[in-house]
Length: 339
Image 1: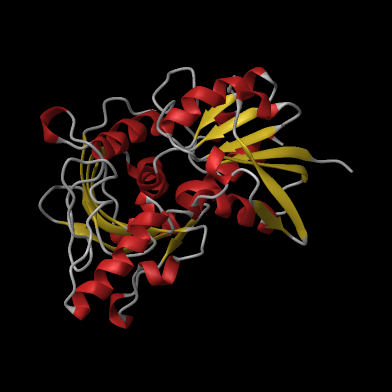
Image 2: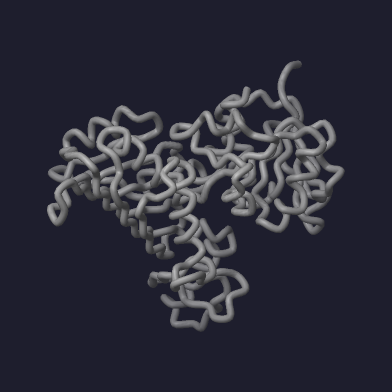
């Protein structure tokens, strides 16, 4: 049987489980599976089809004979094990932020910069989930009229903070409605010196604060967008917000262009771009929402309209499933480019 030996690092997490689902859905030619996680998950089993595979502790020696290794276990694990996997001949697609800004590591959204993937040296970085959906909407507009400036505000679901954050929204909501006390442990991030309620709330703080009081999440989007699109000087500013939605990230994106592009023209170029779906009919109250995009691999764009405060400005609303296109699906599309 022809095919590839595939390792999934972080298989017990939300993205790890979705790797398995998407690999099967897309018919990726998997010859053998290696399920890897932390020591506490070792000896548990993962079902694929009708077969059960034992989870092994991820170690440097785990990658012998592996062709593709998909990592989603955090930056520390990626830094420790991804180079070891490459040494043993695997092609690594890493979902952490550990290598994204390394000039030797391609940062890839297949519809936007596929050629970058083919210049890999064994390791390819998958971008931040919010970056992926934004560049999918920006690239066709840039091709049509040139980007001059980008302003974005995100409304990011709790699944971006992991399964424990999803569970926390549920338990907090139940407790609040019942008038009980509740714990705050996952928002703005695990290990923060102070945690906030996320149920029935919004928190304008994702990841740690960096220079000029921007968060790391905001700076990821700025730096990664410039790298992926090959626009190192692109003026871009971002505010990221965590919202009590289980799955699906939303973004309000304002673009200033170098040349005129009407909303009608913008809809056409977005419709023609692979992986983008225009959902934009205000008269019918039709626009992208997380409940409409969950489980889908496309990026959905709506509310496309003029920004009349600048000569060539447009506003748009961009929504995608952050676990699929924002993580698992994009990673697998990268591997598909190479086979």
